[in-house]
Length: 325
Image 1 (spheres, rainbow, N blue to C red):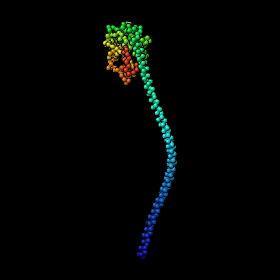
Image 2 (image 1 turned 120 degrees about the vertical axis):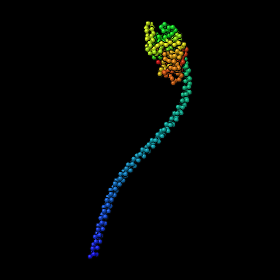
Image 3 (image 1 turned 90 degrees about the horizontal axis):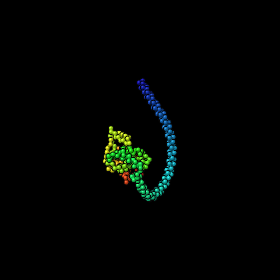
Image 4 (image 1 turned 60 degrees about the vertical axis):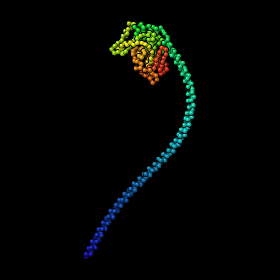
């Protein structure tokens, strides 16, 4: 009986073990089935990606083919352009050779022409100077003599010539203008004169009257200067008279900032013919211009007019006279 129990017990143990093994196998089978399902899904995804990449590869291959075709066309165009450049370079070298040849001929002709122009300009300049000096310093006219007589009568007293008074008398004979009038007699005849004419006329009067002193005006706040001419009183406000010795005078033309103006130089002092206003000293307020760098810059003297010569310092006489305003 005991043996039977043992056999039954073994059978039970065997049965339990079998159930356990079967249960474990079922779990492994389910796990394998799940893995197989996952692998099938992964395979489908990889197949889809493979198809997509294959399509992209086809597209890229087509684009690459198009780019290669464009590059081939561009290479052909570059070759054509290189051929054109070679042709142009050859033509350019030929033109340079022709230019060098023509330049040599031009320089030879220019040298001859310049010599002729220099000679012609020199002759014209001499003729212009002689005519200009004759008109301004050698000739006389009744109207000029009348002007001189009135200035001596009303403005010359005790060997002192009053420049402000002389300017007022002169204004009855002519008015200032920017017209280029080259001689004092024409200016007196038409009643108009520029700064060149006014300055030359004052210079000539000084040389003929030969005063011992010159009366000019200097700025003086609160002071007035009075002049009576033909019973008419003229008041010049905020200026006072100053008398300076007269030795010699010349006409000087100087820069006023891009333009020119002419006045009188009495030794080292420069006064403006307009009311005899004192302007300054040469070497302090004015200097002599000797290069193109100071053309008509303020305070630089570019032209001197004497009674027997015209000295222009850095430009032709005619251009200087035409540019003075």
